[in-house]
Image (cartoon, rainbow, N blue to C red):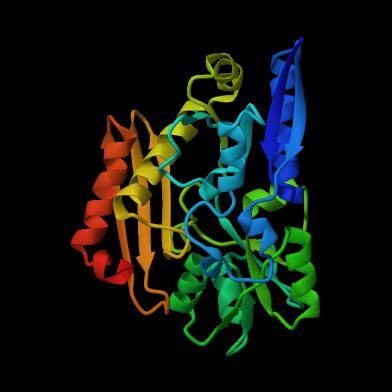
Length: 310
């Protein structure tokens, strides 16, 4: 029997994601047993601060990567959007499972909105100066771009905590990732998906990353059973965009790539933090996903995104 140590954060969503991966791997490898190791990251230890104030890239991954490098765990399960494109020497993105729904979701408080209505209409019925909660600078910038009157306030914590704050702390609405709600099987009332065409998800949103040591070929072979080619190509394009722009957690950047035939189509957006400026591009290409991501980054820069990114 083969035993592998799996590292994960301890939030309900992180545990649900890791246990989903564990079940899938054990079903595919009947002789495999996985040990769950919960690791607290910098982002977990500083729940009271907005994310940009905590530090730079990797606030949800650095401690887990250290555990990988020192051999305390054999592989890690991350939300891919939390994993910076540049990895420490010796680590690799061993497998990328099939992606969940990558869109953002608006959850409204005390509004009876027909389920067939879309998120853009839901934003229109919010009252003037409505208070909307999010911990994401990208989401805040896109909300301000669409409705400059909105009051955007930081709201952190696990998904249940954020939904509780929606009802207890005077928010008219909050914005969350649909993938998290789906993986936790949460069906909140008055929940509407925001159209990806104008509310573009974070790079990697909805995808998982299985990270291992580069030289641990046995573990990599086990993890490869969950590899999904179209998802890998899409997120490699998105990560190339992030790397080329040198973007971090404080960058209001959205990007979503999808496999189209033999190629990749990517829509990417940069907003100024106050939402007043928005630069969007759509690129398509065949061949290397990384080249598609780099083309999208160059197109954004040619349109002036460099001034917004500073």
